[in-house]
Length: 160
Image 1 (cartoon, rainbow, N blue to C red):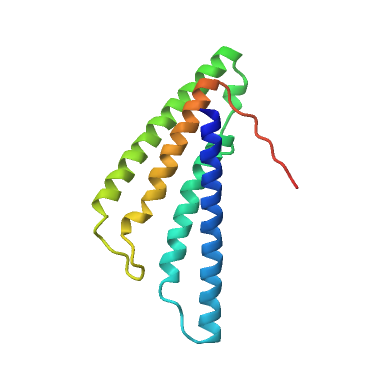
Image 2: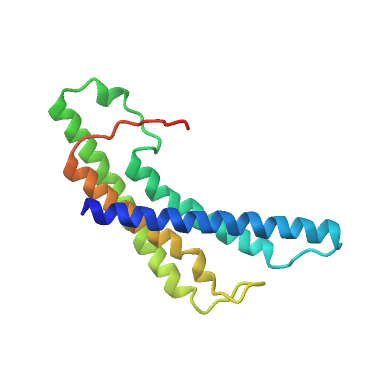
């Protein structure tokens, strides 16, 4: 399961890279068009907003998998190993329930908004909810792996 999750992580990283490139290129083109040609590109606002939503929810699951989300561990650090694992797993269960709720809500929104079109792009509004569902499902997988492992990953900050 860990190898499969690592592969999914790489796919998410590739999607994030594509989305960030799309945001940068489209916003740059809009700035050039606005100031160089005195005409703004109509679709850039919606496209960049869609890209930001995709990046945000895809990165969310990667942060959860790496233990890079916000965590207050002062109480947990004062507990013994068994109690620490219980508190950690309890937190994972709570977050898992929230992610499950987010996943179900996103799927409902995808279904309900499938026939509603965006203003300037030939896409359904439901594409705003697809990364929410993907990120929630991917987060659930990371939470299951964390629950099985039973201990919080130590954060490591690497500078290159």
